[in-house]
Length: 419
Image 1 (cartoon, one colour):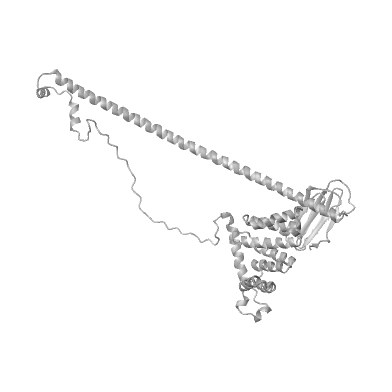
Image 2: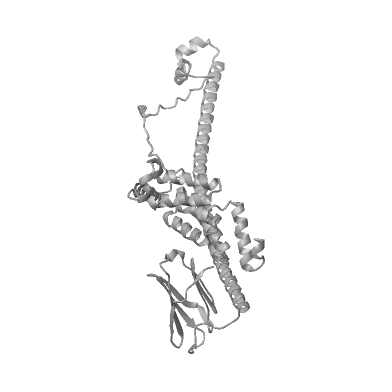
């Protein structure tokens, strides 16, 4: 069962209520708040603060500030009046109904936010697609314009060549006609005629040109000035080795480097001054060896012995997240649910920043903490951890099924005994 926080304080004026809840050293990231017009809940495992408000408030105008070890809530009253007390006295059945209404209201708000976010993303994708199509159409029109210009230029050149061929054929036909008419007009031998009259001196080069075909001159293309061929060469390319198997994304490089640095520091942070190490061998003083030993004991079903191995490994090095996460799994088997929550939370703190290399470890820590919450009947907190795990591995069908079952329990459609 959660530990109820009772050392809170509150003040009020005519239109506002101020509530201060101490966080007992909990991290701000581990604080979960549910607030409606008649109900306020602050959960920071293993502690819980819950209040059924004396009068309704305007939750849209209310504010919460979490930090410096305290959560301060500024609640706006719906009616300007002085409250006799902060809590309202209602029976357990009424309290259950208020909790259920609050959870449903929060879920509806989250669903609306998700729907609005999905709609915004869809609009952005649509705008991006339309912009891309517009750019592609402009590029296509530009290419088509170049093609049309080239086609028109080629057609003009072809028409010019055909006109040149026609004129050449006409000139040839005229020359042949002149030659034929000259021979028929004079009855003297042709050789005597040619001695006296040179009718068409321009014909002589035509017969002496060795590059002609069927009496026509051949057209030689003008040689083009071509650049000198470039000399061959060899370019050597070397790539920086990647520690992470994922594709390089510049936006994740700092987080990956920070994670590698933290892992290197964790391996060096070994406490060798413990009294327990006096009777241990050099191999048994290695946190990694102790982790493997604990894993084997866990697989064999000896959970308490596995906890002892992880305990010594944590004493040697408190910066290895796998020791805390695996000890949380042992505590789940031993029904030490609060300890399982604490170890899972410690593992998640060490598994920062969130990168691809520690995704599997973060998923296990979220599932183990969510399972412990559900065993304590804190289903809302458990659902948050299962949803965080599902975001890491959206294709995990078993995880999705468990998440849906917890959601059904919260909504009252399924009893916890059937989950």
